[in-house]
Length: 86
Image (cartoon, rainbow, N blue to C red; front, side, top):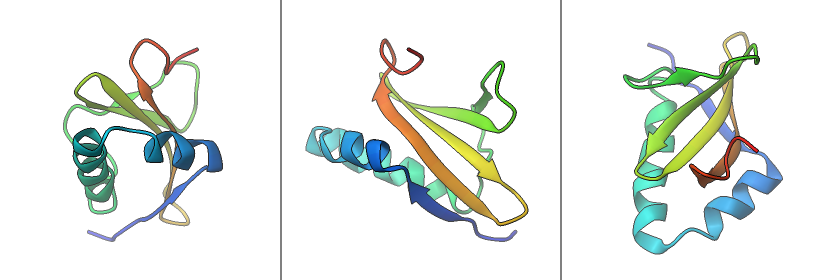
């Protein structure tokens, strides 16, 4: 399986940096795993969006876009579940 390049949107990088250390470690491991498998078990496609998906990391969600042609994953949001879809 081909590896995908993972890039953060500027706002998502800021959200990721502001996470508590333990949560940052768990979320970072989940994001690193996306480079090998962009659609891991438990991934959900967001309704109303063509290329947006989300994964759960505890109470937080990582929303990302997959570009299969360029083998690129762009992280768009890393937020608590009550705030991520607003």
